Structures are given as C-alpha cells and as structure tokens.
Length: 609
Image (cartoon, rainbow, N blue to C red; front, side, top):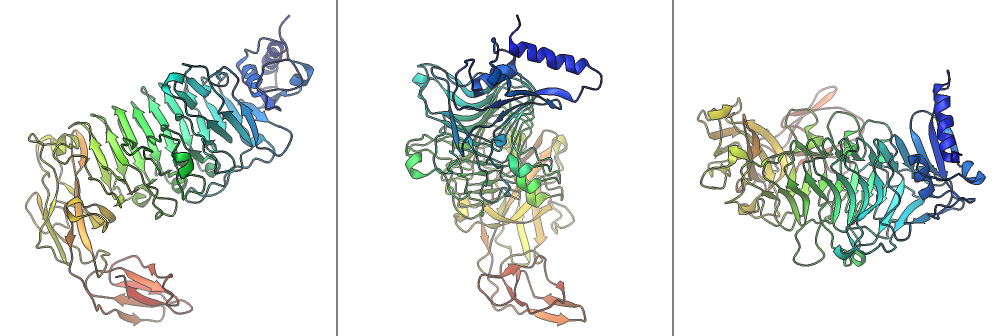
C-alpha cells in the first residue's frame, strides 16, 4: 500500500489533470512543533515537513500530521509555521547531524513570517532592522566529529527562505566546516530574504557559524537580500553575522546579487558585533568570490527601489592582532562585478565608524566597477562610502586585474590606498613594464580658479585608448597628503575635452570656479580612469593640493517679485538656515549665482567654511 504522503501527491497530480482544477497546484506543510524527529505522532516537525515536500518521508502520516498538509492555490509549495505560544520558538538541529535534511524540492517557500506574531522589517536600509522573528533554527548543539555540511541545505531550484533566525556555534577544522544556509551545486535561482543569520531574535545575542551563506557551484541567479523589484523590498532585508565568511559565492556561481543587507552589523545599524561576542569569534571576510561573474553587490541603479538595495558592511576585522581579513576577498577570477551604493566601514548614519581591516583583494583577471559608471543616470546612488579601513584599500592580483572606482567617498582609511604602489596594477591600461606607480599629479600652479596637472595615461593611442577621465574630489582631511584619498566628488572632466583649457595630451587645465569648494581649509585630489579595447582602470589619487583660503567673502543678494538671486565671487558652498541655529544649516546646491523662489518666513545664508 502506498504511504499517505505518496497518496497525497497522487491526489494533487489527479487534481492538476482535472479540468478547472489548475489553481490547486501546490502543497503547504505547516510545522507545529519545535521537535526535530521523524515519528508518526500528533506533531509535525520541520524535519518531517522537509521530507514531505521532498516526497521522501517513506511512511504514512498520522491523522494529526495529515491535518497539517493541504493543497493551496498557485504553483509555489510552502513550509509554514504555526506553533503555540508567543515564542521565539527554537528548533534544534537533529542530533548527530550537520543540519536539517536537505530541501530537494523546487519552487518552494520556507516562510518564518507565517508564524503568528512574526513581522517583517518595514524600515529603509538606512534605518534599524525592525523585523520580529519567531522561528529560530538553533544549530548550537554539537555535530559529529569530522562532519561538514550546512545547517539548512537548498538543493532544489527557486527555493526562497524568509523570516528565520539561524544560530550556530563555531566549529573547528577537526569538526568540519559548518555552513549556515547554502545553495547546492547546480541549483537555479532562489533567495534568502528577511532572515537574521547569526543573530538571535533578541537583537543582541550573536551566534554566527563559521560561514553564514554559501552559494557553491550553483546554476546561478541566487539572491541574498532584496530582489529590488519594488514589491516588499524592505521585508527582504537580511542581517548576516558569521565568524569567518559572511557570504561566499564560489565555483562559478554567476548572476547572483547581494542587496539590502547588514553584513557584520547588528540590527540597530550602528554597531558591530558586541565585544564580548567578538572575542570568541575569528571574524573574517564579508564576501568571498570565485567565478562570481555578473555579481550585483548593492544597487542595480535601474530606478526601482535603488536606495533600499544598499548593503551596510562593518566590523570586518580579526579578533587576533595579526589579522588578515578583507571586506572583499576575490580569490578566483570573477568578471563584471558591480559594487554600488553601499556603506563600508560606517553605520546607517554614514558617520558612526564600524571599522574594517582591508577593503578589496582581487584575483588576477578580475574586473569590477566599484561606484558610479558616470553616465549621468543615478550616479549619486551608485557611489559607495568606503571608510575606516585600518589596512590597505585595494590589492591587485596582477596586471590583468581591472577595477574602476569613481565618485565614491573615501575617508578615515589609515592604510595605503594601494597595498604596494610599486607593485599594484590596475588593468593593462595602467600597468607599465617597469612596475611604476600610476598616479596623476596636481601642479602647484593650481589656484582656486584653475586646476592644473598631469595624468600618465591618456589617448588617443594604441588599442583605441580614449582620453583620460579626470575626477576631482575634496581630499579627506584625515589622511596625509602623500596617502591622499577623495572624500567628496566634485566633477569629472576629460583630458582634451570641452572643459580642458590645455590642448596637449596628458596635461590638463580646468576652470573650477563654479565647483562647490569650501571657502576655508579645502584641499583637492584627482584620480584618472583610462579605457581602451581591453577595458578600463582607475588610478590611485594624486597627492593633495591645499587651496588658499577665501575669508571675508561677500554675498550679494538681489530680489525680484517672486525670486531671490544670490551671488558671490569664486567658489564655495552656499548654506541656508531658517533661524541661525548651529544645527540647521543645509547646503543649497549649485554654483554662483543661485536663484531661489520667494517663500514665507525668513532665511539666512552663508558660505560654508
């Protein structure tokens, strides 16, 4: 006689063949117990729910278990939760196992938010995560010696896991590498959304495993965080804290995205792992990649939910003094990475330091766009904040590593911008045969009116080399002039372009009087991006050039019936304030002159110092 579960699936198949019954195409299994055994009794456990959905239970369901299995409309199967009590409910990993049974069924949602009392996050990514989680996969119990595996393994196509907290203990090499949630080789699609990996629902207890989320040789298309489709994107926001690697996409898993996550950052968005927990962790890379072609890390800048696709990444550092961890460790060639719109090394306010150790270590042959593409469409959203790294910002694997990093804000980074300027390449464009450092120079002939300088690589030339793009930034005041970095992007011009007053290739002279440069204490840096048939690469920043101060600048204000025109000499940032409060000065965008409409009340103006 067939088992009850097999008979149930046969019934579903018969309904699908019956005219007019196509809406009844999916199965929902509801977990009502925190136990993890597989026994015909009055409870239905998560272990049993997975086996039922896989079609591998291999026994008849009890009448009480059968009551937890139903057909539902649509084509997506579900594992839901309905446990008695307020929770959170802790479901322990089965004894003597590395994790729960692998989920081999396809087109399925494991939905922790179905548990009564659970609630998805509703806040923007630059606000605390407000999710209320009620279902915890508690994998802090011991695993068999030498066992390696995942707490929850996804081996079917298009599996979505949402609304779960996953806790793990750190396992040594002796006990095997224990992953949190992982996509198995060959699977296509799927998503992990609205989960807290390594953080208890109390928002304070940290129990991250050795690896948080693993995508290993998949068929591609996995989503970690929001899918950015404009539908419930904030509900898809994850918090991910692991002891060694937070997210790893490896062995050629392509076309994945990591968007809308806190990584290494607690749910409040302003603190890293608590010190008491951190001392027990090794803490490693935020992201590791190998063959992760076409990865989107952050926003895709397509005009839909872009601001909620950022990641906030912080606290990526080693507990021991001799650390060796990066935000990005690209250990195998990965092509066409897009890393845009993220906060690295700072909290959700863009100010609070959440220091990392190193930023980007790229394997030879890797190509990546880090920041804006400069096409004039949503460039402000594409730029990253890259701050507070105690060691290098970039390390290149060789002359075939091609990185562009434009319009980002670099500040508070204490180490070298390039790991070793004499041996750091950035693509065939910027690598020279003698291993020379490729860095632009700002001439001391520069004034507040004109920026004068030189770039080492510019077209026209062989292989369709184009004229260099020269990006101008306000320098980060926390770094030395010889290790300078750009904190605030001001403009990008082109060598021999319409703004260049110097007709010679490789030298430039730009009128900068219209740029928003503070009247006092300003220094400038530039970087260059060169492009040819082989790709594009961005240089290190020039040494910073301090500009003379402009004290005592007079604003001229004229008024017509419906507008006010404000004019001032030279450059500067106009600010407005309704009541002279020190905390309410706000920038008025644009160079002199600025025309503003007449409105009710009063406004005071100044040039920012």
